[in-house]
Image 1: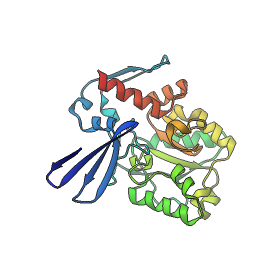
Image 2 (image 1 turned 180 degrees about the horizontal axis):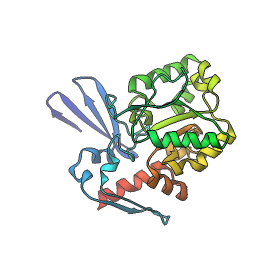
Image 3 (image 1 turned 90 degrees about the vertical axis):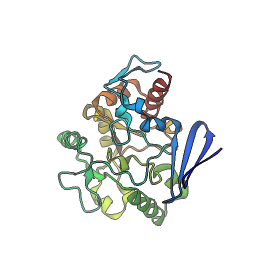
Image 4 (image 1 turned 135 degrees about the vertical axis):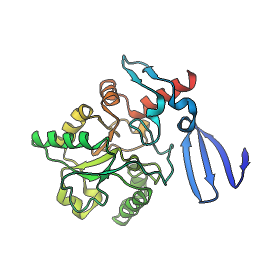
Length: 265
């Protein structure tokens, strides 16, 4: 089906969830987003209070309105199948502290900053020092990461599994960080910025206390579409982080329920 509106064309395809591909002819941007993303520009998206009891759990999510799902807000969602405009830039502030010369962009959303600082501080108190190996990334920076991975010999399969395409990375939201316990290795290779097992276990266990979730947990690859990443933490706020921690659900599963509830209410 093709619709003409000025110089822009809209092409709609169906694959699992309905996806929309918006071809912006004027600037050549190709944005793919799931049907649920239409909420982002809908007036109803910002007004009605959110109050959802998740299926098969006793967990209830509440919020003043569904605007908390807007791009750049705490519960905003991106994935391999649902993207945002490559030109999107969230409000940003500089990270505090020394994060090493491998970190090209030392910025994060202001709402994340104090919680991240406390998370890292308490990990250090537990004798598990960690550093930020990656924070905010623009679409251009995301493409550079993919190219750098390829240049270090990573296979196309690994790149597609672990490194999102521009416009599909949570780092562009300014709400995600990669953490490392191997600072020296980061200087040699971005791919070497990993966590040791003991540190990874502590961070995953305590992340919700600071409003973070382990975004791509082990055993959930078929749901998230991304391989296990012990180092990638996403800020969603303490309320949602607690629900995800207690229920064992992924952010993908919770988000899908929120969207279905909003569309049927």
